[in-house]
Image 1 (cartoon, protein in one colour):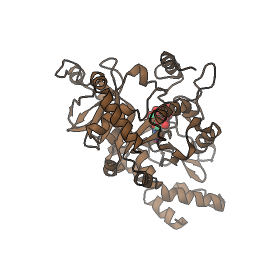
Image 2 (cartoon, rainbow, N blue to C red):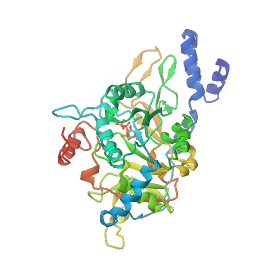
Image 3 (cartoon, rainbow, N blue to C red):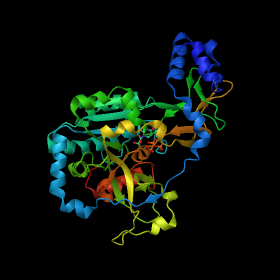
Image 4 (cartoon, protein in one colour):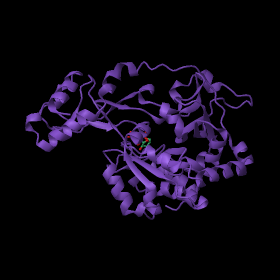
Length: 407
Ligand code: UTP
């Protein structure tokens, strides 16, 4: 893209100020800015108003595979999972592109050390959990790691230094997720430097389109990978590609398996798996009506009783139909660093504009079928979002101790 093309693209959307400092930029900076203008999808800016109108459909319950069934069918599920893993049909994908702002560390979240008597990094916990399955099945599961432009170099450097915590380097593939532009409350793009539009990672649903754009979907075909376990960086207890979960999803012949935990209370703040207009979906806790909260299933149990934990086993061939424009856009008020009219760099302490994200949970609604698979909360759900309190380093440490993990 040249200057004239960039100017025309930007003026069509009222954002010419992006080129305000053009005359002051070096050749290299000009090139970088033109590339950013060319590659950035600005269509999100025109969806700000309509994003709030995304209407939900009709909700109904979706039965989960519960612990009693999993225990009674353990051998069958386990054998089917081990077979799928040994045949190389299952991969794993770590979502590590987030900013981890709530945790408040400048480093990638996975570099956070939760150890007490020795260093125990979040990445280490996750890789150790995956290595359990590698050892059990004697199979090096292909591991994709999604970073973002903001944390890629630091993530790769750290994992290299730590020798990938024992994972086989040539079974790991990194890729960067796409970025979305950030703007003020009037939809005007922020600049984070004279030669750079402010951006942030485009949400964890960005994993599939970013992976395809990076040309990595060819690995699926080359290696015969049919299923991919997509999981968050911050749950230090989760099992990844564990054979029973894999087996249950494969045998159920669904588009996606979703790990869920039984809700601790009817009004617990978790997204609940259900059907929406007959397709799998996740209803947020604030969207649950009293009627839904009190609804019972045929066994007299709460009908909307299972919360998602961001660990999904997707059937890859169905993902081609999940396109970004079909998914809701989440317009989120955030603190966005920018340069002011005097080109001074400002790091706001309060939200000052919008970031745009698409969420992996919205991918579920694009698929035709889903198996919610119950895991035991105390054994598999220790998310780290905050330094203290709920879903924190403290609560995760407690849960690790209960599971005899040395910290
Ligand atoms: P969170 O929703 O907890 O977001 O991400 P976050 O960015 O890590 O943390 P906060 O909200 O700024 O405190 C859940 C998972 O999705 C990944 C995160 O890395 C985490 O594993 N994620 C999130 C991405 O990979 N990309 C994104 O754009 C957003």
